[in-house]
Image (cartoon, rainbow, N blue to C red):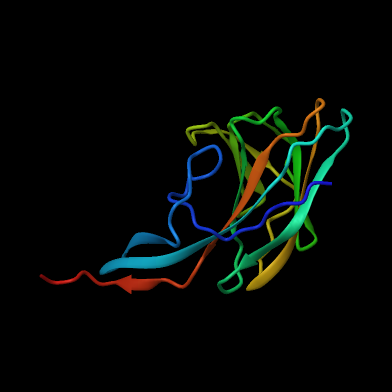
Length: 183
């Protein structure tokens, strides 16, 4: 059974992943317009990757580990990226977070992504992040408390190799006003 690698490093952009480029920044911030100015929010990512292994067709592959939410309890943005060098597509992924199973009845092609939640749906994205279709799922992603949470990822295997993918959880910290400096 492959073991994931877990990290809370921040990407250089929200689209940074094996399918979208390298990570470089030690921290990431989200800036958005707010009434009377701007708001700045810290962003933290928790990730783990599945490994490709030789399996029998139809045999599920399961990766498990822990992710850490450094902020207050929240429902994170969840994304599954299938590596552009993956030997196989991702079929029928199931992400179990704190005992809640999120089964997505879809195939995710090599180089594509799957965005899950925040409600009971998932969106299949092409390599350029264009939405291809939305799939309803039976459960809503759970709220994750501050600290460590147990996660498990599984999928069906169509051939002799499993899809190589990365599962990302995006957590947002408390927003603060961003005040422009005067020159």
